Image 1 (tube, rainbow, N blue to C red):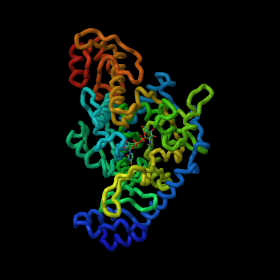
Image 2: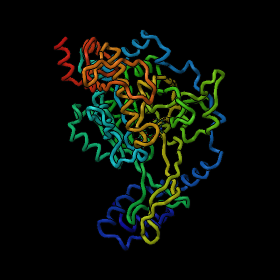
Image 3: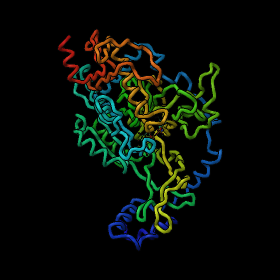
Image 4: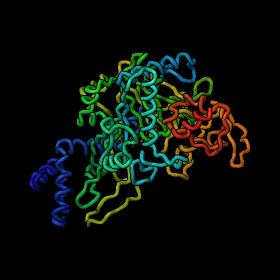
Length: 506
Ligand SMILES: CC(=O)N[C@H]1[C@@H](OP(=O)(O)OP(=O)(O)OC[C@H]2O[C@@H](n3ccc(=O)[nH]c3=O)[C@H](O)[C@@H]2O)O[C@H](CO)[C@@H](O)[C@@H]1O
């Protein structure tokens, strides 16, 4: 840890002496905490960070940095599609994916370092319970999908394979996430195959280039964006861990999509089959202002233009048939080969763009009073996970069906979209469709048949409640033998025990 004199000298070099303005008022414990925090920051990097932040923020508010004029859609031949592919092709990709999984060559990596401010809960988003009949949290659903897809590969290939689960956390999320997994016995996974690691935090900067103090002895720090992944992979020797385990392919995803298909064999198989080093799942954008990034090309290179950085006029552009021109909505599900990640970590990480977010950052004023600003006062800098696409030698996009694969939890209930209610509804609607397709008949509480409904509006609840445990079915497979011509009383919860009962009554 630094001494006071060393900290003072460092801060002077970086033009940040104000950080010690309350030093004489701090207790021994508080001053130690501040020195510990300052020990993590290198003076040259700090100076550069503050200068870059101010410069990037002024560029951000002008039109200079915009890429809209140089954007072009991804050519159709570079987009694989679930919708446009026949069953045989999808099966071929799925088989390829399962074969890779069976050889322990596939891992998943969860980006879980975000603060989930929009959802407004004080704990990590993965711990959120959207009030499914089972009461499962997002983390539990994800863990069970990993188990199931491992089992599918084991049964098909007669093996005992493992899909390691890497979880990138931040200072905000590591402690509670670790505890949650321990308390829940890793949801049945082997703890040695769940690897948590931490991304870096960086200071928030005021418009005057000074880092912001959120307490008398604490700098306002925020995670360095989900593109902090690439530095975190190096800091925590994750690529070495992957190599040791023989992992070649990685499925990277964000925490809040209740429909995420963990290590999706079809997506993995598609990317492997195309010889891709980098890939992204996309859905057709629902409406121009939908808050999803768009996968496109800029100067011939693949890129995602984030929803916060595209101009509304560009988002609204339409093709000859009236369809959105930039329709490839990013759902934050990416494929990378380990080789590609190694190259990025070694050669390209420092070239990743710094994105600017101008935010309201609570701070202490000159008298030491905590102030909650009413208008933005601070610059947060973030790297984005998809900014490495431009370095790919073979990039592919894979279009999937929204109703099967994308329903993110971003906002608290009360907001029109992407809430606990919409997430729960999407999952229950999917499971209802699976049960109908498997030949099940739903009954209400008085044992009266509920007429089946084969198509539903997006904001419509299914007529019967049906939840299927991922431990029973990963993507609707294997349900016919359990549900065909069975009367299922709503609410119907198909867990492993219920599945055993159903097998016995067949
Ligand atoms: C930068 C990015 O990927 N943006 C995508 C993200 O937007 P969106 O704005 O929703 O991104 P979030 O802020 O929710 O972050 C996405 C994921 O990254 C994680 N995270 C975030 C910040 C951080 O420092 N560390 C970290 O691990 C979050 O925990 C989350 O799992 O999801 C949308 C789909 O739902 C996509 O259309 C957006 O293009």
